[in-house]
Image (tube, rainbow, N blue to C red):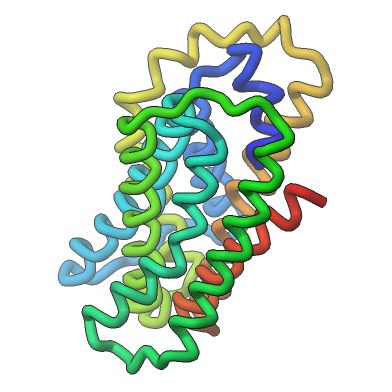
Length: 240
């Protein structure tokens, strides 16, 4: 995602907040096109639905992209791979299930191995600037996503996964409008070549629509701890 997204972000074709608005808008459109109109949600479930939209879409997208602008990719990557540990901590605090020593050891080993890969890779390149502000943004984003992963199964199991996705993207789209709508008129569409268009389509369809779709289905049939642990594969795939 971020390797391909840089083809658009680095030249400054689209500002980060506007890019996020386009991602959420495209996700909303595709979910409605493929899975139909919105279903009715019980009034008692609206607070949880809004929480999912804020933690899983709005805060998750806005803070990560803006945090990445203010800190180094190495810091951002190291913070983000701490998400599975945060998921385990939240589940332990909520006392939803017993967290065994094996769970903790496996999670810490995964974090340690992934951190080692990231640090070894970064030593071969020039280290870019980092800041406490950017690190905090990425950390709050990681916490927000961990909350989303823990909360999502409650509503996904009550309603169909795709029904929840439509609603959280609709709410997220409204929330993103104030941040990104002004940048839509500044996009130099005529200056973008086919590689930029292909990159944009890939990010909007594959790493937004398909990623959230598959993630929701995974949460429907698995646990937040297992789903979050696959974040450890990201550096392996990126380095490959």
